[in-house]
Length: 338
View 1: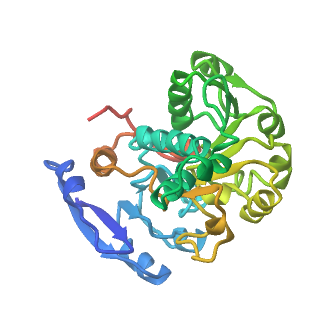
View 2: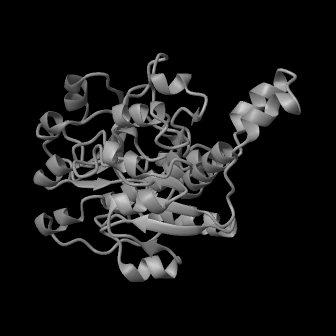
View 3: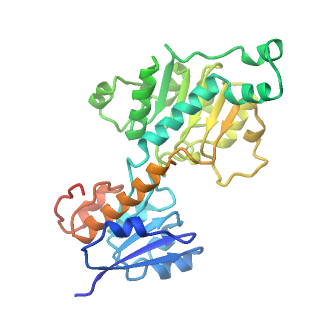
């Protein structure tokens, strides 16, 4: 019997050491590839049983050229660079690293919320310029409080729940819009579910986005949502830029429909330096870094290695993005935590 083959693909030179450590004792072949075109990707994954994809775009046209792969593993929470519906059509499991950066992203969302409310970047610049007292009074007020305010979450998955827990520790009430979450889970986390995005917008002092980007959530939030927000509210996005209509966001901020925004993600990344959002004093931006930390980097690679080991051993993975594929695959034993 031929050895099972793992192909790790990346747009830059990958470092597979932590992944390989999780595969010790399993008979397999492991190859790494730098892929900067669809053609290079197709060639790299030929004959692979498991594909580890470190940020390489895989549209349907690429997925449908994949012949033998059982699974496609992604070392991130988001998986929008892969057509997971096409993968399901090919009976291929799509696996992400859900949970590896839950605390990091939720901390970042809380940080952006606090930074917006306390006008940290504005006051930082004024203070460094020697502005105090009368010179800063106009910039300081109005200043949004945090305690006793309402945080609205768009989606109540792992990260949304972590944000809810931390916001409640600050004395906030939390509401959420998530048509896929069970009501008893929301109750467990002391979160009130609302029936529409507009209801969430109208009743929130801060809004934080935590939905994955897929065909159902692309530009989920747009002009109608922003027009429903309080004029004093702030909008936070640490999930994916494509979940928001960025043009509508820019227009809403220009029209002062709400107070400001904290953004870690954008519709196009890297974002052009002339993006109008960068010129707005009431917008705080970071470079899609919410999930980053020394611990998260290690956790991601270890989790990918463990999931790869499960696939090579013939069991189910722990974090299956497309569970509907189970109906198309021969029965596998349940996975266990490594």
